[in-house]
Every structure is written in structure tokens, then in C-alpha cells.
Image (cartoon, rainbow, N blue to C red; front, side):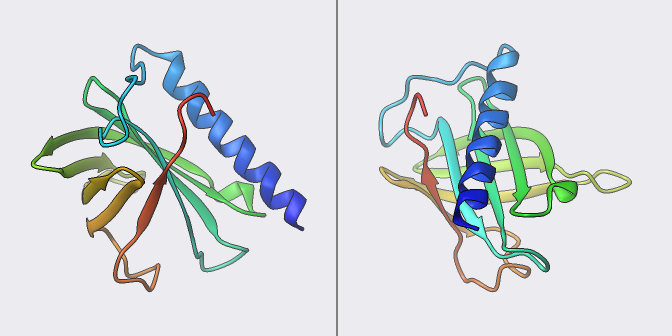
Length: 139
């Protein structure tokens, strides 16, 4: 079971890195307190063993949010949007995959270890804060 989870994580991060590198949205060589980079959180899901949510912030202001369901690949999805930063606060606006699509705003505080939610749709997660950990560059 642990091997399957690890393989899912590796596949998810590889997919996101491939998508991010395929276009002109090059990742910045950012310092530890910079908002540019890749961040991941393991969150619960209604079915299965949970999901990995990956947020990528590119130096050109583009953003990608990827959700990978552990043990249930048919539910995976990728959403695109934009982001901006001011005074250590990150605003991410994603266009979701609903019909019709709608914009969802997330707000985070950035620190050397990652992102902590200030505003995030936390209803399905049962948490007061969602913590995204920075993925080391070159992973």
C-alpha cells in the first residue's frame, strides 16, 4: 500500500513538472522565501486514501493547481490561473473545471517552508488551515 502511495506521489509531481516545463512558464530559481515554486499538501478525500494537491507558482504570474487522488486516478484534474504577491501574502485565482467554469480565489502566507492558507475552500478538508510544503527545486 505504501509503495502505491509513493508511486502516485512521484507520478503526480512528474506530471506537474512536465506540464510546467512544456510551455514558456519556466520556474524561477527562487530563494526560500520567494513565492515562485512548487508546493504540495496531502488532503483527505471523500473516497479513497486522500489526495495530493500541488500548487505551482511561475515567475510570469501563471499558476497551476493539480489534484491527484491516491488510489483513484479517474478523479485527477489540473486547473490553471494566475497569482500575485504583496507583503508576504499570495493571491491565487484559479479557473475551476466546473461547467460553466468559475474563478476561485485562494490566499496564502508564504514562509521559508511553504504556504499556509489564509483563505482556502476548507469545507471538504475539515481543517482551519491548509499547509502546502515547498518541493525542493530539481525534484
